[in-house]
Length: 221
Image (tube, rainbow, N blue to C red; front, side, top):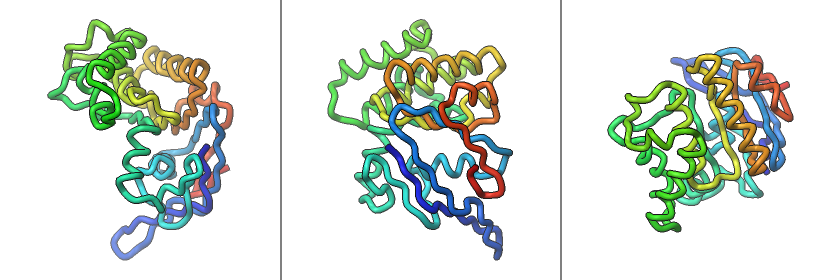
């Protein structure tokens, strides 16, 4: 499904180049759950963003379902990110002025191939499956951390993506809510054969992954 070849990433720090990723190769098949572990600053999130087409590598290629992401026109790349890849972030990134339902609907409104009624029904169904049916009219500030993260996961799923990328999805949650997110992700994989790549410090999350990698000093092992 997704292949990364010789991925390098440099950042400028004044006159100095910081070499964050050093020739990473990675193959991920449909239906796998992949966990990427490593200390803070190791480049886990950078790698995830490159795999999802959010950040361009300094060198190397990422192929998603046979498409070389960084050779695509920007409009086509944006379409793949919107329709085929779902993103879940540590800090949720919910829009505070929108309700829970409106936040979940946003990616579907960009994807214009479905009517509004169908989109709304899909969003309501996702929220119900995540135990949030009584929160649809609430704003993010009125939710607990666990509820905000479940809302963010529902938003990531609204367009039925083939790939779900999770950046520290339990990083801001207590143990109980973190375990609930783990259960949700495992259920998605089992029921939909959804491919999931997650970067995490949470060893409990890594336990249900089919592959576990460690990134350290710019290398993936």
